Amino acid sequence: MARDRLYSSRRPRRGVSASYYNQKTLHRDREYGFYWYSWLWHIMRPVLVFACSLIVVLGIVASGWQFVYSQFFMPVNPQDTIVREFTIEKGSSITTIGSNLYDQKLIRNKGIFKYIIQFQGLTAKIQYGSYPLSSSMDINQIVSILTSGTASTERTITIIPGWTVEDVANYLVKQGALPNTKEFLDLCNKADLFKDDFREVQDAVDSGTLSQRKYALEGYLAPDTYRVYANSNAEGLIRTLLKQTEAVTDGVFNTEPVTETVFDEEGNVIEQVLYESKLTHDQTIILASMIEKEASKKEDFARVSAVFHNRLNTGMRLDSDVTVAYPLGISRMILTSQEVASSNGYNTYNRDGLPVGPICSPSKTALTAALYPDMEYIAEGYMYFCAGDPTKDEIVYAKSKSEHQENVKKYRPLWQAFDQRNAENP
Image 1 (spheres, rainbow, N blue to C red):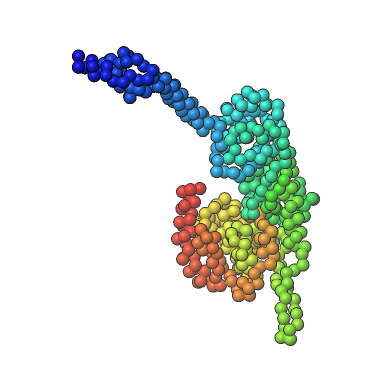
Image 2: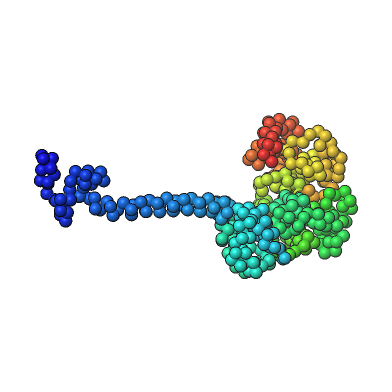
């Protein structure tokens, strides 16, 4: 009876009769919290259960979409914002275009590209030509550009100073400008096809040494950036490069000799020609190609040229490693004794004077240096040079053989380490 009085003596909750509460109902209400909130909990509980379930489902969907996006849609490299020319050849299928995009690391999956194009009915909107694309674009951005109808019928190519004709050919294939290197390289040995139109090629023919050269057109494909037609063939590309070579050499060979203004004891101005080269135009291009390969920094071009001119003027052999490396296809700094002894028209260790032909495409800076060497190094009689620290592109000069040998002894370990690193990480 005391227990019954205890419960019945409590003030009933507003809106709830006193008879509602007994031992069972009070225990149930207290199980869910303070009993005066029980009515609210009965309403909130299903809402919270639904909200939590919805959050779980949305989390699963978001995780799934993130996985799909990262595998198929997101940019290949969000940090690589460099814009490159992507070319669609006339008659290319959607499958081929997707494969080319994938091979050039512009999309993550070639199959999803084909699906998007076909699902959205965009096949007819893709036209041949060149498009500016970047690895930082996602697949939807790339599809939008390719179907925008803004294709260019031109492409941009850049030829780097110091490249050989083989380097140029490989680059053009990589850029999609040529299907393979064979036709291009074959044409680079057909001087008769170009000699009537280009003076430098005619000079090379007149030298009488073409039969000994690796490529007849080596050295005459001018380094520069070009806009060329997307459907240009190998011969058309070669003619474009040869035409630029004429423009460059005209600017070097057809200018007034470099002079220096000096004053005599009475203060009168005297202009002196700094250097008058004895080399022909073709020989200057050959020397310039050697300078381009030997020197990395522009301030060294005229100094290296001075050493070569000093040797030529005194009848010394040029002893240039780059002339040994070119016909053998070697990129190491240190050559073996067998390589140095190799017999060909380029090796200046066993050949007097210049090599039989250029060993790369020289820049205008190298051509100018070949024509006008550093007069201070000419006057002081520098006869030797070698690489210093290869990681700093250093060149060390010497006047005597003994001094040169000391330099070689000092820096040779650095050359060996450099070659080893390149061998391990080509």
